[in-house]
Image 1 (cartoon, rainbow, N blue to C red):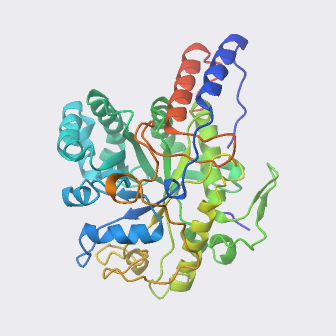
Image 2 (cartoon, one colour):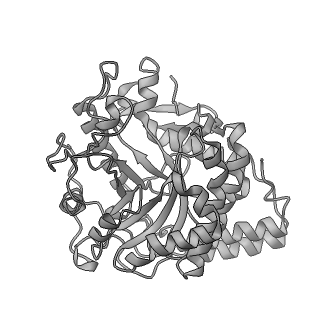
Length: 427
């Protein structure tokens, strides 16, 4: 059965440098307070529709879902104001069309001054997502501008003393993978390595996550005879699929896709692989589609999204990274009636534009008691963490935070500088 969506051995560093690096890393991984469910689960709030309610209408829906993290695709002022003093953590998109502008340092400074600074601190912006699926698009100008835009925006935030509050990243389509089955054979497309390797260096240096848009729906739709529907729908009763190369067992297709991306990172950039965390910036299942989109039904959408919520609430990681709990942004909050493409593209929402549910979820998310900001959404329980995104583990061993990622990223940079044999890039 095809899983659909490499791991190279790390060379040894010299004893002294490795010892220093490990000591620093151990300090970075010191236990911290537990995170909450809402700090792991987010949702995408797209607005490509002509019948959507005002952004204020999203707030009670998020509270009903027990979700305290939202990804926006642009810095719409009205939407950013609607989230003020709610405590909801926002990923704010930097649209593809402005990448060339913000790749210039002056353009990035101006963009941050216009689109971010006026809304702080009342609106809790924790990350900028620069472009969306740029590397698998057909615009070479966007591709060339992506990393310079990320760097310039990071520098602009640093100049405003916000680089430890707001991360900079970008979201990738899993089409960046050239090989994905089995997960242990995961590898990036060779033509994209020239872009991905320095992007991974950026993530390692700044402590920001590597985002993937992962859709088991597409994999199943492409190969319904080779992939069991229960495997794609994350059904906990499904027996799963083994990876013969590693002996790891994959209970569902989503975690197989994530681990294929982890292996691809390790194969491309061994130093970055030590510290870069993957987060799922989009995943979901459509409730309707064209005549040939037979898997797009409300029943399947309800099963997938209910199982996804249950999976996140279990605080578990992937088979390859069991100690790094899944952090996922579900796609999407509303059906968006003017999105282009097949009919399924307009039917990913949990809610209709009139705020009624598209279908009933079988999983009831836990609700968080009223917290900071006056809105009862305080998902991370504090305002002094690095990027203030709570990370993840209820286990006594503690949790991985943005602060940990930043320090560990510094370790990777240190090791790159002083022990190149141990941290050689695979590009």
